[in-house]
Image (cartoon, rainbow, N blue to C red; front, side, top):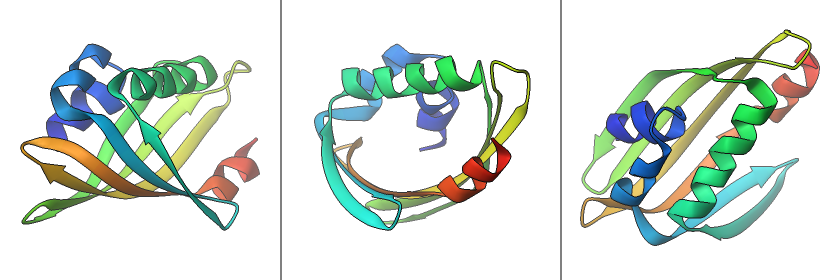
Length: 120
């Protein structure tokens, strides 16, 4: 899982998403206390990371914790980027990934969106 973060989630090697993700990945997300589920392809995920790069530049991504248990992997990370006004924005997030046949099949993610909002 750390290779996925070092390459894809960091934005350094986006095309590697095809190596690390199934063709369709179920993504469970929480936004403003609203839980919802979407399906992402590797192409969709690449576009998602590119959107973050547009907002925060080539951000730094630091894995703070990673725990694996059979087919599930928990990852907590800190993302540090800058706005177009050169203001530092720090995002703290965590996710649990379900890995099937060596690729991400599903994940559950939580992001400290209020923390991001407070920095804006």
